[in-house]
Image 1: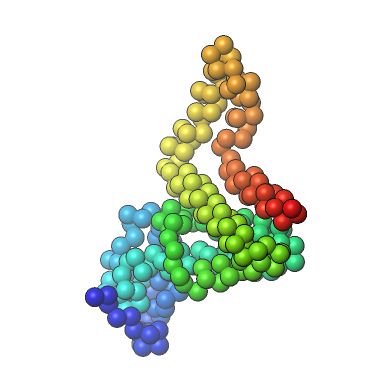
Image 2: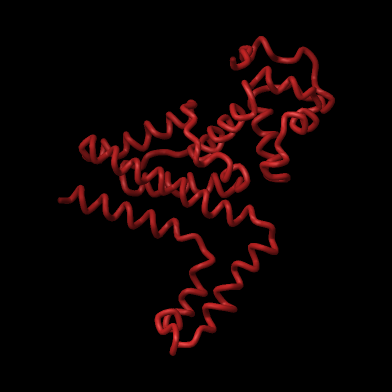
Length: 232
């Protein structure tokens, strides 16, 4: 049976932690995000989180049912980062492009957390609000509901898939990431035209592009397809 979560007002500490802070749901999530950034997923445990907060590890379970509940809260916090300050322009395509880039940027700002959370469905307030916003943009543009849902599905999955892919690269140790990047210059760019004519012909372009995220290009392609459908 899952642990009972005490309402915020009932679980607030009456005295500060060793760091002089009063524990809150938000403070725990922010501290967990910092720990993920500094130590990766393996470094995020209730014991270490308690130490970072200056509190006993059991205190975390007064706010969250377990560590997976905390992971879902972190996922929802990243979506909150993505949506903060966003305002509709009234142009559906510009609005969706901005939302997609914001989601991608928010996850890449926390690559370790992105790898851990981007595949999760939380049902928490920020995620629900973001989904409502995206569907509202599509329905407001004139897409029938079935098409709005189909494009929403492709849009959000594309955003999250590229977030995981690009975040996983950023989360690699620096030496491994640099070695991967050098492969395009040291291997692909040196393949002879006699055996690999297509790679040899495009090698300079491959070297220039392949270490950068292609998400903006993929996003534009998806939006162009949606725009063509709306025109038809």
